[in-house]
Length: 240
Length: 240
Image: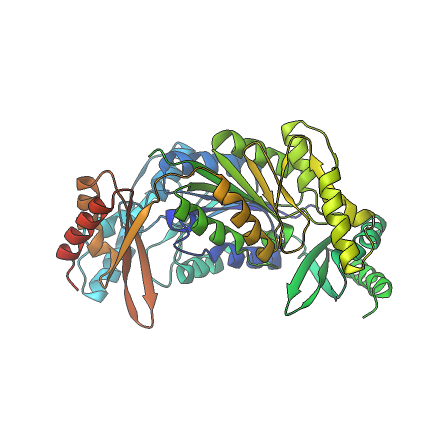
């Protein structure tokens, strides 16, 4: 497949401690799939400089795009922007355009634009800003790394700002069939079908719910006619 | 901190495509925190041999424990056991005790113990089995790697089987305070407090909901008296 690839880096102690359930991964995965960009890996790391830098450098070298969430607020544990600058070996400081956006916002709100809030205008050298219509403090893109907030409403707004600027591939189409048999009975015929359609991917996702069991079989590919053909064969093998 | 560390490896195309929302990460994070084991990193990779092997070898070298979820069922896309064997450089084959468990199960159910189902008895050399009270097919532990199913009910049962066998650390205690002010006003005093209590960790997690906004500040540490002391100071700085 020649679709562009992406990785996500979630930065947040609160996810790793079990305090918060991450929802940004699921949102980004769905949006990238629609755009034909293949999310190939996700990493979650703690709010630690060395861990963020190491993960960023591994991922930005391996994939076409890297999306980060978390760690760009005003508090002492928000260290993502500095870690990104360190990963790229560039300087970081308060940038005039980001500062102006924030100063106007806090003036409108009648709130003090104090030192902590000014930290949110710290942007690595060479980055472009990502619009934040929710709470103004911008994200930023540096080369192939897109740095976004962790609060889900803001993360989603930033994803909506960034994705239209990226070149996607042919969207990955998928169809699924719910089969009310054990995976152990589905497995043999499914492996044969997968061998017959090497250009498609076949996934089997078992369920057990309210006494019923079986598997959802998902067929994915870029050519809709081929996906249709495989689904027709599958439905013939496992009639409802 | 001298608490043991852990990483999680989630194996699953269905998470990366956005089809399924992962819930195993959140469950494991909560259970490890209770046990005093620090979940330091999570990775999600696709059902691809090379990606699984590379992630496993990176994580098992860096952390005390690695927990995997997904990819141990009977279908052709279930390749985790073979990838674990390859990562450790050991052989893999159908093991008599696992085979006997499964054979008895399918006989009770009046279902054929076919070739696909026998795949679930493939266990890397040197591993010990992890009990699966839900659907019998076992997980396994090889050195510091614990290999478990992706279906949440089975994953949770396997976690319950494995965790009591591991040595934990002092549980990490946490308390939180909901502060109805912008993070930009909390940030300065919070940074000062964090410097005053270097043995504790302070996290700030902003919220915006139904027109209200503020942050939940979480204080974590192993010494309950110290956490209490920090919370008292915090509540004094930000009275309700």
